[in-house]
Length: 344
Image 1 (cartoon, rainbow, N blue to C red):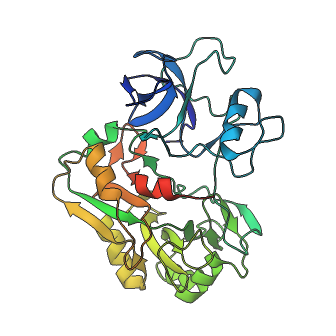
Image 2 (image 1 turned 90 degrees about the vertical axis):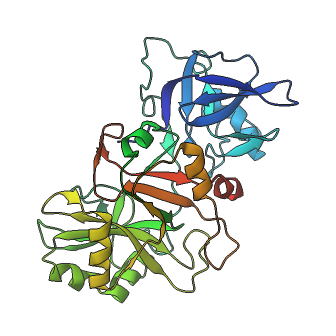
Image 3 (image 1 turned 30 degrees about the vertical axis):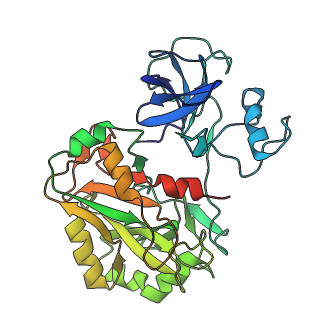
């Protein structure tokens, strides 16, 4: 399921903010965001921009630039600008809701319509690790990309997982990496989230050489693609406090069966190949969490540090398809403490 960075959404609830005369909160799906008082009523629709959305440098959005201390005007959008989590008058605000009129939109829209491309909205992407700018080519199409939906965007996944054996794993704060032997031409690929990276002195290939991933994957007849998080010095802010670059495997994709393997199979393969799997935060026989309890579980510190952890990823113990996601039943809960502590 592609992430809808800008979509048509309906206001489900309007909540007053104590002591605030000019603003109030509205609920969209599982998100809460702050709007001008009286701008929306329950049942009204508008365009909702999720956190990490980067609106284009156009007049309807220029009031946002002032939040970053930039004088609004054409060409004034800050390079690092994105919609992000904030607190306004003590209320957590995650996202932006604008009316159709504010955006100059007319025509018939249905709830959930994806307007990301139509409005020219882009997704914020962290910078690649040092030395990884020499791109080899597009991400290989035979492997699904690594991008989990947040639970607030698809609350229906909670009911899909309810009652099933599950595992919640630590979301390590780093950069996504995928390793595979291409089944068509036999070449070995080291990939970021969107690109295959050319061999060189970069974190992707450094770890591949250290772990001898090319040889290890060929020894398994190139059947598996390994996906994980690269963490360490020079990657993001190294919140895990590592002294060297490490790979934490979170998924294994079977290129022959064209499916992700179960959590147990993934961990068994990691043990066999001498790789580190992502730590388990919680596992159980019957999933019973709601959104609030998952966000509470997501909070915490990375072990041995004072850094807030990014969050958790939740999946059934055995792979299962999600109707809400249109694919793998797998989603994430990002710690609000982590989001509020973020700095560009």
